[in-house]
Amino acid sequence: MTNQCVLITGANGEIGHGLIRFLSREGLTKIVALDRSPIDDYQKEVEFYKGDILDRNLIDELGRRYQFDTIFHLAGILSTGGERDPLLAHNVNVEGSLNLLNMADAQSMQRGKPVVFFFPSTIAIYGFESLEQKVKAGKINEDNYLHATTMYGINKLYIENLGRYFSQTYKRFDTTPGLTRIDFRCIRLPGIMSADSLPSGGTSDYGPEMIHAAAQGKPYECFVTPETRLPFMAMPDAIDAIISIARAKKSVLSSTVYNIGSFSISAEEIRQEVMKYFSAAQISFKPNPQRLAIVNSWPGDVDDSRARRDWAWKSDFDRVSAFRDYLIPGIMRRYSVSASKVSLTSCVGA
Ligand code: SER
Image (cartoon, rainbow, N blue to C red; front, side, top):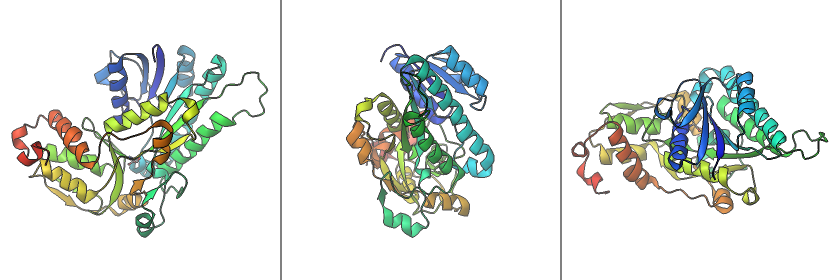
C-alpha cells in the first residue's frame, strides 16, 4: 500500500477527520483533501483544497493534477439538513457526486486502471411505512424496504445505483479499446458515534449529542422517544470498515453495496449507558414529530452477513465496550473531565 494517492471530499466532516487521522498515522498515503472549510488539525499531513464539490472545474483540475488510486467521496448533506433544504441537498448529494464520478471515470480510462471509488451510503436508503413494519422486520438485509423517505436517503440510493452503473455499464456503446471503468464500492453506514466530534444535520445525532452533553454537564432534551431504536457504530469501526472495503480484493466483492452493523440500541439504552458513567446527567425526552418519523422509517438493526462473508467485516465493539472502551475515555479527554467526576462503578467497567 505504498505511494498511494487518495482524495477525500468532505474532509472536514466527522468521518473525514477519522480517515485522515488513520491514513496519516499509517504514513503510506499521499492525502489530497477537499472541503468548503479548512481542516485545522491536519494541515501538515494533507494537500488541502478549499472548495465545493459542485465546482466542476475544480474537480476536473484535481483530476488533472493528481492520479488518484482511491477517492473517498464523503461530502454530502445529511438527512435533517436535507429536509430543511431539499433542493440544495439534491444538488450537493447528486450533482456533486456526479462530478466526482465523472472525474474518476476519466482517470480510470486514461490510466487503464480502475480508480476505487468509495461512497458512504446509509441506513436512510431504507424506508418503512409504519413503526409496526419496522419492528416486525427486525434485522434487514440489503435487498428489501428500499423506499427512502428523505431527500438524503433518496439521493444516497440513487448514487448507489449510479456508482454501480458507472462501474459496470457506463459507456456501453463506447468501442475504445481497453475501456476501463471505475471500481465503485459502498457501505450503508448506521448512526455513527465519535468521541472527537459531533455530527451536524443528521437525524441519528441524538445518540452522540446525548453523550457529549452529559460529559459537558449540559442538560439534553432527546428529540426521539425512549424506545426509538437504530443501529449505531463507534467511529473507529466505521473507519475500519471504510478502509477494509476500499482495500479488499475486487475478486471477493460479490456486490457494490454492503450493510455493516455493530450494535442496535434504543434511545433509552443510550441514556442508561451514559448514566453508568455520568450519573448526574440530565437527559429528558421531548420527541420532535418530524425527526422521530424519519428515525422510525429507518431499520432498528441490519443484517451484515454479506460484508462478513465477502470481506471479513467484523465490528470491534459491542454496545457495552463501545461506551466503556472508546466513547467515554475519549469524551472525557476531549472535555477534560476528571475520572473523579465519573461514577466509580463505570470506571471498573460495570
Ligand atoms: N447519520 C445519518 C443521518 O442522521 C444517517 O445515515 O442523517
